[in-house]
Image (cartoon, rainbow, N blue to C red; front, top):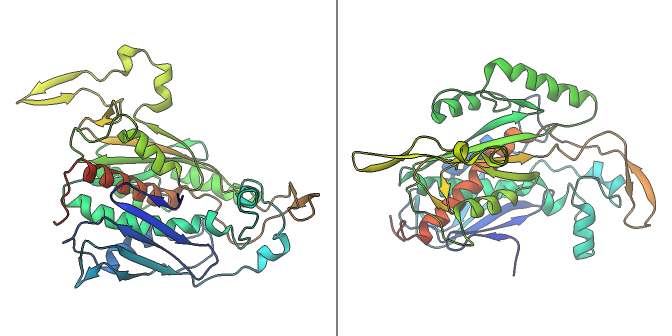
Length: 362
């Protein structure tokens, strides 16, 4: 059994550490006949890449190399191997604290499980591992687009400031992509930036909520009772570093509603069944309704902060204090948007293949 693989049929196995030579993945179960170029993947990697005055100064080009599974820019149906070199690695700031467990990180738990850990930037537990997820997600998106399915993500909330949105998700997405924090509310965007900057000055960080909307998924997708669509999406998204909670549709707000408020009433028009609302988030009984799938993920504040904190020396088992230096984002929500999109696309495609709606050759 391995924890580095996700998927039943469309299977993604990631590898690599934050400060190792490279990160990458093997994508098995990808249908043949999909047009796929390296730039299709690089386009998504650029969206995830840090940039601007509110992100980590680590500058990785994040350019993928396709090693197998593609010939003449078309997938062969065989495993697709993708690799991204780590070029801007600097482990010096981690050497003085190599034996200290950083609060909020997986340093202690990896040590407890394996008896050894990669202290260089968090190793396998680093957000750097998500490069491979985004690369695999780019392939999943290409396949889903063949079936008219698109995945959109944006920052619904950052540092306690919630975005108010109007219009269709396509417009919301376009607005968010032009924002340095992927925040689609222009009137409140400056408040978000101000709070992130304040946290930076205080040697601290902030978190938020990512919202994902999937359009075009037909009714009937999902495998009761243990591979329900919402359960599978929660599994996929909760595997992302820094995600501490997932909700679908009305989510936790449903606990405060009455049944008459929560239930999505139905109608028939021209022989098609529709709904007057979408509190279910596009899923009932674990099976898609044909409405937009709406999922939100709670993203915790970046654990690497420069404020002094109490911790333990894993070598001497003595109490110590730590100040984490290095290159870190004061808020990872905008970059987490792209990772949440990728894992959503991978999960939806896998469910579609299970349903028999995606053939081996397209």
